[in-house]
Length: 623
Image (cartoon, rainbow, N blue to C red; front, side, top):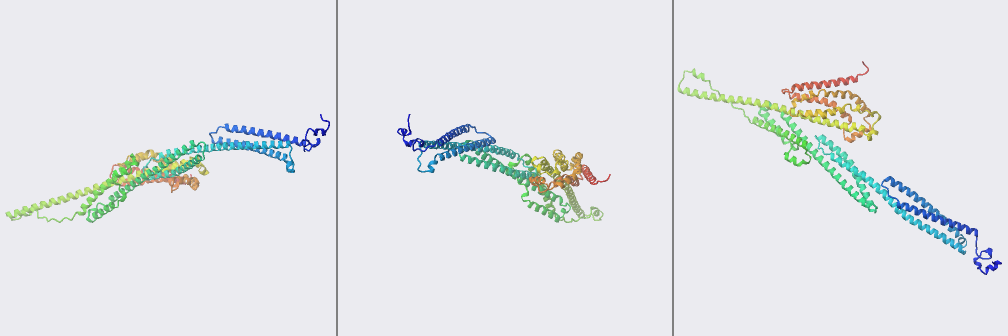
């Protein structure tokens, strides 16, 4: 126990005592409590922050990477939000520590000569240590977060890449399957052109998907080059995309070359067929009577020679050359078509050869000299002269007369044979003309069926397409039956029945009238179509400028609008009348002439009924 303050000084140096005890040390107990409380609170904050960061780091480290884009996006967003909150807490702690440090340093800031006591130095050291610890914790967390965030972002990139890969891969598979369907070569030039137009339109879709596959492959390469953690999974997919894209591209080029080859042969056959038909018409148009003269035969022969000299590329070459050059596109049907046209050409050339030989004979035939005819033997019998000399002369004259009669008989036989040959040739020409009319009937029938199908698929079906519904105006909604009438019924009748039955009369065209007579009841469907035609035209006039029709016409690449195709059935029934009339003209001496006449009359009856029906519709306001 000490009795006084001065006695205390003998134990403790005055520099270590406060002024209340006679010392020299500056001390404020209130300030000391404030500092200690703040330091202990800051220390607790640093500890809790470190624990929270450690706990969050453990959570991040144990998180499994999701397999879906949406889940990965949500996880990345959630972790980023938590990390931002952690950063805010660290900033608050750092701010509090900085203010506490300034508070401790306040005496020195106020008086640079101030010497801190031991407590102040300890407080200063404690706060600096805590701030350093907090900085180190933040730095370690930031480094860990960068790695974690990079992994999550790469995971999201991978999920996007995989999603796009699956989508593009599926589309490439669909394209390959669709390309495989372009295996037809067409049944006519128009059909082949239509298939090629479809392929050309489809090519735009193919190029779009191939471009997307190329972009996706480059994105995968960038991920690989940026050391993505899943590079072993990305690189094979990029290689596969390139390989499949190249396969589709090559397949597309092959299909285009295939169709172009088929189109080339189709158009060649079409030119040849037209050339042959024109040649047959030329033969049929040469009048037999005028060819009997020297000048007429020469002129007709020149016509034939000129026609053959101008054959050019219209004439088919040897079949073996065609088989070799177009082998890849020649299916059984196409091969038969080529053989048919070739046989048709061969028949025409054979007819030309026969006609040329006949004309050359006629042109080379000279006018025969008139043979003198001696008196008949009876005149010499009445003569009083009956000497041996007269008998000898009589015998010579008789022989001369007999010779002249023989020559005259030969001339008569030649004229009779010539007339028979002319009649035979005329009948052959009529048969050729009948075959020509039949070919025109079949070719226009096939084209008609294709046009109906094109309208039904390109317009009628598109009215039920959900992706096109926004382009259909209100006036056109649910009016497909009004616009197209019973065109589907007409198409199915011609496709499944009438065309097939017409083809059965290819070799006997003069009998085709029977086919029309047997199907005359079915052909009444045209009355129903024509009966609906005014309603269809009225609806077309209301909506002809709408985007739906324009888009359909653009897809089909048609130069003519839908109204031109809606008129096709009316034109077709009229065409039958013209073709039957033409066939009857060349078949008047044939067995099927009566059937043709009856079929023509029935078709005219249908046309009259159609006209009467349409006139009745136009009359309104009367009983």
